[in-house]
Length: 120
Picture: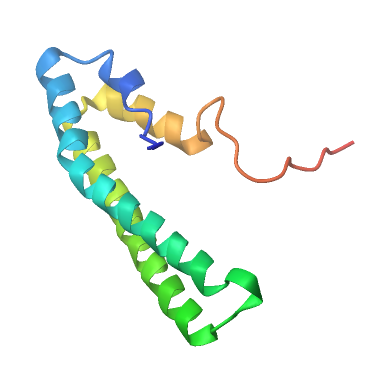
């Protein structure tokens, strides 16, 4: 099972021990909910596969399952933002500035989507 975590370790590395422990506790407390949500998403994916196997298609069933999946994904995003806000509140002003800079550009190695067009 692959779980993604925000790049908090780079921020936590420069913090004092109580601050690092506080950030770690925030993410550890959310782990059980993440694992449960992930298991439900896997189950829904299997149900979607079964509902469309061998060329069958029941739009009502697919929409129902897709709606459940969308709700779980929305819950996951809300929880991620909640953890991010809690971790941010623990940081010192200098660390907050660094975190803002990191998130503004998505970090040096983070890239989503197709490459941007080159201007020549």
